[in-house]
Each structure stands twice: as C-alpha cells, then as structure tokens.
Length: 83
Image (cartoon, rainbow, N blue to C red):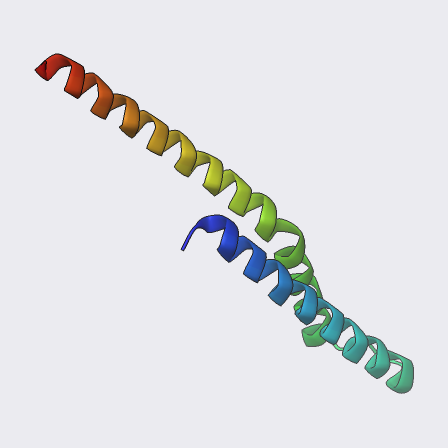
C-alpha cells in the first residue's frame, strides 16, 4: 500500500486517540483534581501522531515518486542504447 494511504489511516487513528484521551484526561482531572501523567502522555503521543503522520507520508510519497522517475529514465536510456 502506498505511503499516503498509511498516512491517512494514521491521521484518523491519531485524531480519534487524541480526542478520546483528551476527554478522559480532562474528566479525570476535573473530577479528581489531579493530573494523571499516563493519560496525558497518551494525549501528547496521539497528538503528535495526528499532526506528523500526514506530512511524513507526503515526504515518503515524494521520495517514492523521485525513485520511480529515475528508474523509468534509466529504463528509457537502456532501451535507447540497445537500439
């Protein structure tokens, strides 16, 4: 599967995790008065996943495009040299 598809999937996973753990962490902090570090670590993890997964996937897709373009140009050059 192409990197852009994986990036889109990870964006949605990050978004859902970020929202869920933000609500759970906010509720725990609001009701209990103390901050649970594990929950807020998960909030930050899923937030970074949400923010960074699509740009990284776009960069990987661009690198893949460049490699395919170079490979095609080498194939065309080898075809020309054979004739």
